[in-house]
Image 1 (cartoon, rainbow, N blue to C red):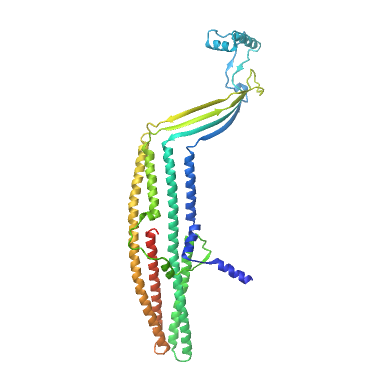
Image 2 (image 1 turned 45 degrees about the vertical axis):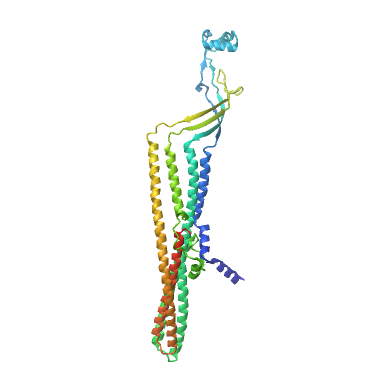
Length: 472
């Protein structure tokens, strides 16, 4: 049971993956993809943040103030002196107060206060409270602002821009995985060819040793085959270490831990058949490339920046309303901080503000000119990118035609090398050939096999490059 469980764990740890599996894993786990997805969420919240600026802004607060020392109150005081006092009957203050208190009320109040101050000349009447509690509830509403309207439009364009960034990140990661998978696959198939040739040579070496012991072959033949076998084994060891390096690069481009074990289950002929036909005539469609769409969206953002500074004279209109309930207490003639009597003193205010910029020293004009220059720069980059895409497609198509021709030639060379190797083995087993001819034909066969594999790899790479250039 333990052995079976260990075998299951080893099978799970060494996962066989096709090219499509590697691409899918990278699209789900690569850090660049995750980062781009986070940027997309951030863009969504940025749109909401900008939109919230134009919604009602409501705030509330409460405050309390109390004077610890009565003498420090910033109060107004009234003193009539020891002999009493009087107020000028012709003054507006007298007439208003007399009307509020009733006819003759001011004189009566003056006599009362005069008597009070006569008994205590240092007495004062304070008009400010010792304790004050107030609350605030305010609402502010932006009614019109040109910058706000443009910011809302820019935020939506920015959301689309980040969406295009995610598409570019997906395309970039996909291409990196393909570029890392194909060399690893080439080395793996080279190892398979080497293993097959080593197996054939080991059998021939064993047979030659037996023939040598029987006296029908020279020791020189045995030594030549042993040297050739040692060379192939050494080359296989080097290729195996190179494959480990290349596969680790593949895992890195997939966003996978390097410590994980994977094996490649595809082969070059299968991928060639799965890639389908190649389009060698259709004109390039720039809109199929996510990099191009990203550049166009950047151009739109630059044009919005120009619109922002094109009308700096646009006004800003805002409305506001505020309600302030308040309670005050601690009035009195002496230094009493009593809370016995409180007064409710509310206030409310509402209004409208209009602000029109007149002159900012030329700052808006400078910003507009810089935004225009930025838009013109993006237009130049657009032309350069179109030229680069056209060059990329033309080069990939020419590479495909060259690789197609090399595959046909290498297939003929492999068939010829295989026939020479088979004939040499027949002659050697019949005793009319030498081991030198065997090693030479074996080396030629191995080179032909490698040549065909490399030609097919180049053909597959060219097909992939054409699809990349066409945005497929």
